[in-house]
Image 1 (tube, helix red, strand yellow):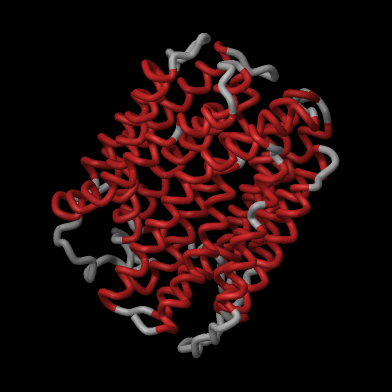
Image 2 (cartoon, helix red, strand yellow; image 1 turned 90 degrees about the vertical axis):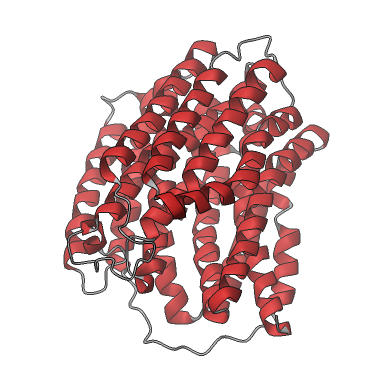
Length: 461
């Protein structure tokens, strides 16, 4: 690895580490945030969903921005903006200010992940590219482990505000390293930015999410609830209409004619919707109802991440040999059983008998599922379409989590208790089982290990 390649890899790892760390660190801080700022479950939903809303809506168009203005430039802007919005979250005096800061922070995160991966793929080739992506993936996994523990320690020993302020340290380090990176030469024409599609996506997602979260407080009969819902649904319909006709769509709908691509993304809706909903309610319940400290709640989720780090490569390799269908069916079933085990965690919560076994089974299920799912989606399309295919699948997973967290209050009730927690986990398990069913019925094993014969975006599979 040359010094330039090493520097670029460090930049890509650090910039993505910030975004993934923030995604995993916040859940354990939610009870402390609501204790200080009020707002109950509704504020907790908005703190998570505000971030996911802008991230999910803009992550597709962020790839076009990276291609148009340069990956290094977009990455630098994203890092600076993420640092500013992190500090805005840290000093937020009331709940509404925190939610606005989180929405702006999600927009910054949308610039980081696609640009960091694009920097790797434009710098490394062949086996070196695979190793670089492996390093990037490993460090994002470490962010998943470190986030809940670090968040719990900061909440218990100081303040939830440090959960956001601490982002500044890796951002400053990344900007220092990035200063020595020159923009790679462009090898293809600049991509057009689908501004209309991005605007329709933001409104189409924001309206329904606002209605789902606020209906618990205002009721479905309130015009403040049903008008954003109707306007948002109309915007989503307009988004699909526009993407089918736009000259440079941010989400090429032709990709969904490929069987494993549409089936894999449909399975992603159930699987990642379940994950976001399950882990959101898990961290809040253990503290607010189970009486655990933030640190203990963070540690309780670690077995799932460890299982993924230990076994994801194994099951990814097995799926490469035997095809993804079996693993995408069995994995969500195992994870769903793990969430059902967690329903036994009633006060006084026995962490070692209910929480740890349940979360470990969830982690095993995810280990069986995630790599085969990614391989099925991206392996079904031509290699030159892998970038947009990955961005679409990432956006689908974020939006699924966004919608399901918006439903959390409807399922659990405004005040979270044991019964509400169990209802949410039953829904979570059901979503996992639905993902398994879609995988079994929809996914097909490729006839050969290579995907050279995969159909193009406009061809049926």
